[in-house]
Amino acid sequence: MKRLHAIVHGHVQGVYFRATTQDRAVQLSITGWVRNNADGTVEVIAEGSKDKLEVLHNFLLQGPPSARDSSVDVNWSDAAGTFYEFTVQR
Image 1 (cartoon, rainbow, N blue to C red):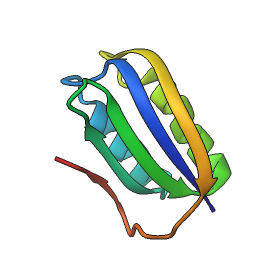
Image 2: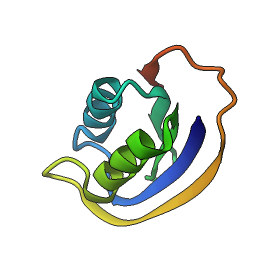
Image 3: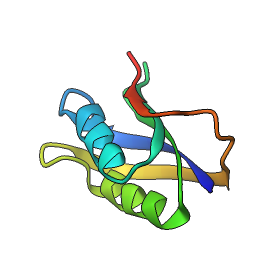
Image 4: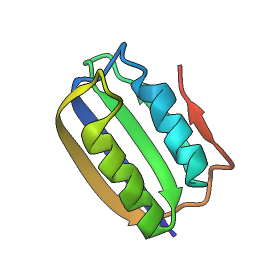
């Protein structure tokens, strides 16, 4: 099991980015969270199998239809196993 920590830059707040990321993660049986940051980025921490996390990473590169991503910074590590579901942080 692996952990993906991503920071998504661009026009990603106010476009249902968090909700669609949660939907995709739940479909993939990935745990973790997504949140808006004060600097206008969206942050994601997700844990699951490497292949499912790569699917989520590809989604983050595109985002929902109204998003305009400029870049995604990603760090990979081993999963900590601390999550039980995928949530939207407020």
